[in-house]
Image (cartoon, helix red, strand yellow):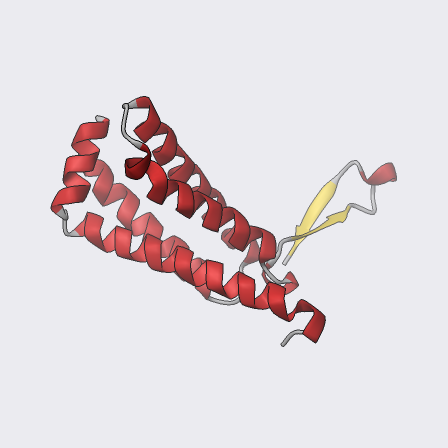
Length: 144
């Protein structure tokens, strides 16, 4: 499990990760069923509606990857995907002239992504080790 000194970090990780995954999963479902506010938002931002069908399955896969144990390299990809998606949404809303209240949700999910990634336990991290074949640690390899 975790030591008492790491317990607040462990709890913080799971709270942020569950909130992030709930938001990504519910957003994906809304996109799949073409929930009208999602459709209206995509139109207002100037994106084609088929993007909903592309983003939704990737969000669901990202949620599954973050919640299941193992696969730290794929978890890094999921975190990166969520970060780029949500920060891109913030920029899209700002660039289109939307109000703060229209882009606060993607901003919150961007922050949840960063905090979840930062607090993740060692068992969910990608371990980067210097390659023993080169001096001064100039080359790196990953270990799961």
